[in-house]
Amino acid sequence: MSTVTDRPNILWVCTDQQRWDTLGCYGNEFVETPTLDSLAESGMQFTRAFAQSPVCSPSRASFLTGRYPRTTGVRGNGHPIPDRETPVTRSFADAGYTCGLAGKLHLSPCSPTRPEGSMPERRIDDGYAEFNWAHGSRYVHLTNEYRRWLRAEGVEYDPTPVDSSAYVTTSVAPEHSQTMWCADQAVDFIEATAEGDDPWLFSLNPYDPHHPFDPPAAYLDRYLDRLDDIPLPNYEPGELTEKPAIQAVCHEGAYANEEMWPASEMDDDDHRLLRAAYWAMCDLLDDAVERVLSALERTGQREDTIVVFTSDHGEQLGDHGIYLKGPFFYEEALRVPLVISWPDTYVSAETDTLVELVDLAPTLCEAAGIDPPNRMQGRSLHGALVGEESFEDHRESVYAEAYDLTHWASDVRATMVRTDQYKLVRHHGPNRAGELYDLSSDIDETVNHWNDPAYNDVQTDLLTTLSDRMAETVDPHPERVAPW
View 1 (cartoon, rainbow, N blue to C red):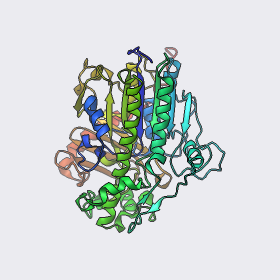
View 2 (cartoon, rainbow, N blue to C red):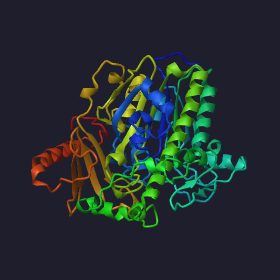
View 3 (cartoon, one colour):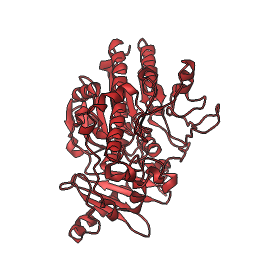
View 4 (cartoon, rainbow, N blue to C red):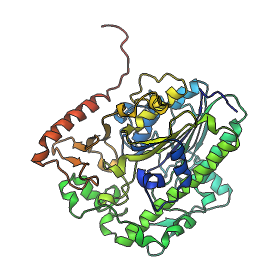
């Protein structure tokens, strides 16, 4: 067991597509998340943490490298991460850490339809010595270790439709879920490293609560008697007419596909059941994290371990008339839970400072005594977490982008900046569409002030801020090697 607290272990939990308001500690009165609520109470809870992309690959490449999506080259799903990029796990491995992973990575394209036996995701020099890859439950090829384990257990992954719903299914029992399988891999890793002298970093990356909406039946059952109490999505009919056209298309069907979760065709019961299923998957995640934290306590490693809990991006969940994700910059799409806990070292509190996920890599480097490579563009939170600096000085804005984000919206080029009071989204191109929300009076982002003359000065100021933030994404590499 490591007792060198200046080289802490790191348990980095990153769920998939989990928006910030899915935990009790963030005000959700329906979910059952006692473990994560307790973790937030014992650590630093960030109430305004934002991903740099509203879809998986660019966000993950960004926070694992500490660099912005356009800088890494992973601008959208389907873009492979270049060999030149260096995930922070490589830096930790070089510093003597043993790095492991269970679940999803998604730094390069991954398809559920590739032939069995082929490697579905290309790896670069990522530093992981233990690599338990399992992108998600539906990915059937033999390289998905979860699916191989499921076959060995004699269990078939065959989701069961829920009566009266065209959009929700129930899946395997909790103990056979991909989420619990990931947790079990983490427990095995923690127990195996408990007697060693080297510190470790483990990436625990379950697929939940990513669609399809298919929680174990026992978890969904908790909600069925109170469906009528579940609030409907935040959507005002007609609000999309003053917003970029891609949003109205996705209102008719997620991913611009009329066959996938078409919000326009759903009734109130559909919306409520979908929300219940999504929350049920979040409850399952909480139980999985409890299993892993118990292993840390049991092996005497909790005090020497930084625990990070976050997600790669959010989920629209019917808000603004849209399900899933895409080139959208609503709070539901970008704002994620973020809790960082290191007992007796990091401050325990709650902060509303604006934070970007790109800040995580330099933060963890500094905590471990590793000089953050100068290629990183995020800003370390370590000084504030130990109480030596103020969170108020961290950021005045957060930035996100969407360049060729998805195959069905490859022509979209959009960037966002959000300050304490405002959010501006600029769609670059001939139509010059945009969004401008006054969050002080419209936190639900219903009214678009982009064409409102009363906000001309605000728009000009925000466009200047956006330009400055875009300039900050210029790659600091290659470095200058001579004066001329």
